[in-house]
Length: 150
Image (cartoon, helix red, strand yellow):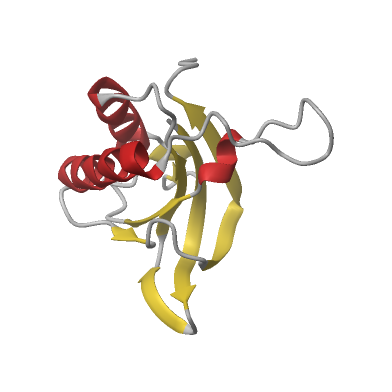
């Protein structure tokens, strides 16, 4: 699994002209699933996201997690995070899991992230054409890959 995590002062998802999900202060997480992902990837990445210290403390240092600031999470599926541009100019998405594999893993990730956060997360709609808007606070953007644990 690969996630792009952005600290946001606000974010929302629009589908067909309607706002379907929105958050105030928190994290916008773009998530890609690959064929090799499993429960271990879900558990590790979810835990990493909720414990990630990217919110300022009283001294202005990034020392607080999403849990500590009582922030919200907007999770959006985005298979293009596994794009390969090695050959030519048209990206290949062969590392991205097919929907029959990706959808159950994505749904398990939503459930686990909600459990780890202690409250429901807002989501986009898997496979839909979405307009995702956010105000990146900082800006703070972190990329985490469950197969490249640094």
